[in-house]
Image (cartoon, rainbow, N blue to C red; front, side, top):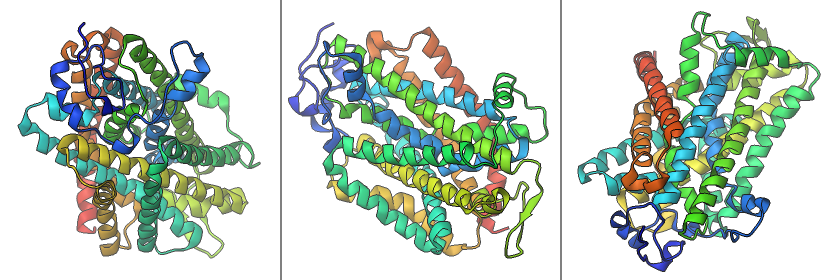
Length: 481
């Protein structure tokens, strides 16, 4: 296949990636998303060993993985464990497998076409589709960030007794401070996320394996994963919540852009290595996310399952039922249930790390979406301020107007919006990666074609199935009932 020249400032070599349509790549010369991070991480020559290559390519999937352990997942995982013990652990495993498939496809799209998903939608679809796709995606990012900001804010509120409204403000400034350090490079951002993810994992490692009151049954967990069932009343709705909170639309846009941070040479050997090591990176990172989500469910199953509630030291009684505000009540009740204040502190630290890491990557995703769809040429700090504001203002408004609202109520609102947006990200991704015109010989094979579309149809169908009930709950939140 003929290779056509491109300008050299793309962060890649001056030739178009094999398999991509050169006719659809000419506009790349004037625009690229995440410009300060584009092509900044060098990759070794083909003669280098496995570990040198892995070290060079590892990172993008780690940033994406934090979206799979954000506070939205925490709420559904804790409800599943408290209500059904290990009965829905298989759903966590299944949703993680589907997430791996979708993120592998997102990485491949970016590597082969040289475009992220937002750029591909702009360039490969008619112009009239650009604005609605962009607007819906921005709304979804705001909704997702609402859950992520709330996680950090609740953790600050519980750990330091800061009012929730001001905790949200503090979280916003934390994110802007970290993103201001973007000039230090992609590796620096990946290191920050690695520390935060390690903090989450370390806290749960101590919670489950060190604290003497918790003794998980690995045999029971294995049986729950291998013998899936939805036999108990209400199981299906919680299962839908787990799956619906797993694949986040903004992660697909973000991953397809982050792969451009590696300085790839546009030849067949490089593309194959990039796809191989990004696949390994994705599988490893999302397996970590699965373990974290499983740990959240297991902790809830051991501590809360079968218990009607708990009485705190101040005499307050907290009941465990479908109305439980898990992010708050879990923190308050882990101490008396396990007999050590360390349990609640570790939970709060892990929640803070989860919320903070998710807001960082959510803001980067907002930048990718705005640049990819609109090609807006504005200063990077202004762009970050706009994308962050679009996400933070709804949280400030809702909490300011309704300070008595449960965090769970606000999470309901975010999940409704995400359910409506998700097909608008998955279907274009599968369309592009299955197209010979867009991907050439790197288009989806039979296995990825079946796995991808099956995941898309299943996730979309379950989200739509739960949408009426979610809309009803969301209206109750808005109406203040």
